[in-house]
Amino acid sequence: MGQVINNLAAVRSQLPEGVELTAVSKFQPLEALEEAYSAGQRRFGESRADELQRKAMAMPDDVEWHFIGHLQSNKVRRVVRCASVIESIDSERLLRLVSSESERIGKVMDVYLQVHVAAEETKSGFSADELIDCARRCVDLNGVRVCGVMGMASNTDDVERVEADFAAIAEVGRRLREIISDASVLSMGMSGDWPIAVRHGATLVRIGSAIFGDRG
Ligand SMILES: *Cc1c(COP(=O)(O)O)cnc(C)c1O
Image (cartoon, rainbow, N blue to C red):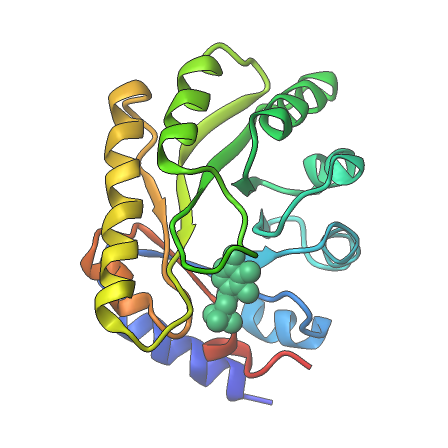
């Protein structure tokens, strides 16, 4: 006990004014989330629908849940019900599905479009051009509000590559704002690379292991 609170304080003290934090609590036990909550953390990131639902039911109502994992169509209903933001919209089909499900339950879901710039093929997301085309085609959807872009840098020690990836994500964010002027969120940066992301204009960082320790 106490370690999560200390880690959280350390991260917060380094984050510049105006950069927000999603505490990525995926695979962490409820006690770890409760500890962060007791230290004032209200925004948590989860990557699995079942786990999100379970934790959302157990935690207080003022938690803002961000879904950050690949979202399968058969899990859309569950995630739309629990999440405040879906950061990981990686296809137009998913965006339309989230919109219609949100409309059905009388909600307007905040979403970020996920761009894929990293070297790893396993990561999901639109290419930069696909993302912009999708945003153009989907400006009229009623069940979603496109608030920004989410992305991940390559998982590498090559700092130049990481810099280039974050610059590319930031550029997509700039292009998105030409279409949707208030889509100002730039969600990028994780435990190992967030200071670089912040230098490239991140407005929201997603930090897990640096707060909660290794995932079991
Ligand atoms: C797990 C995850 C994070 C957090 O990663 P850490 O290295 O533990 O900080 C951030 N973003 C996404 C999309 C993730 O899946």
